[in-house]
Image 1: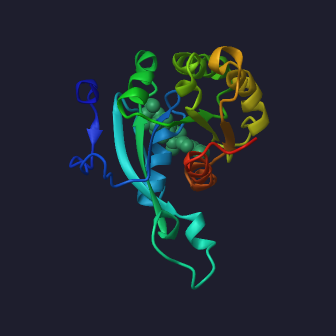
Image 2 (image 1 turned 180 degrees about the vertical axis):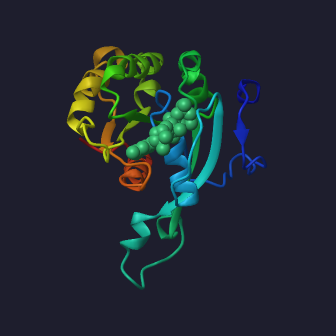
Length: 224
Ligand SMILES: Nc1nc2c(ncn2[C@@H]2O[C@H](COP(=O)(O)OP(=O)(O)OP(=O)(O)O)[C@@H](O)[C@H]2O)c(=O)[nH]1
Ligand SMILES: [Mg+2]
């Protein structure tokens, strides 16, 4: 299905199923110009790369410092995932054009994502309601089942470097993230979510967000 939707896949040779070359994979959604590609390039190339509007998808695997490794006591470093210097995230940058938004859920299902990254242009207050509609439309596909409730949401309130940008709190309220979480599992609530302010051009906040997702997806659901 993804091949039919078209797009650019740079690491074309997949690792064999069951032994993937990454720790997590997530789709990145958000309206056009939110900063999805800038974010992906910043993490992949470690620099600010100029972007053009996308019409389909792009995929890259990025490495980030592993919090658990770097906080292990010296001499106790051993085998296993917690003891690797880096974690690898395969990120799918999905275009945010109007016609593609109703298809976002297809990507979630095709790559069996356990979490979604949603990028908001914090300077774009005029489209905040539309942004909320797009996010709620996506999660409307995952409100009825226990498995759907387990889909974790990370929101990047991007472009925080810009004067006049909405604060993280304003973006959180505008998207009504608490309402979205409460709607899960037929109103029982309990969806895990987090919002973080970012500047995709410098990378500010990006790694911290990915590490929050890593913590959420490590085995057992954290107790409230
Ligand atoms: N100042 C500032 N500009 C940003 C930031 N993130 C992205 N931009 C700029 O916003 C514009 C759009 O960024 P893109 O990364 O192309 O947006 P996109 O979400 O990939 O958009 P589509 O491909 O159309 O879906 C570019 O000019 C970026 O340089 C940020 O955090 N701060
Ligand atoms: Mg893009």
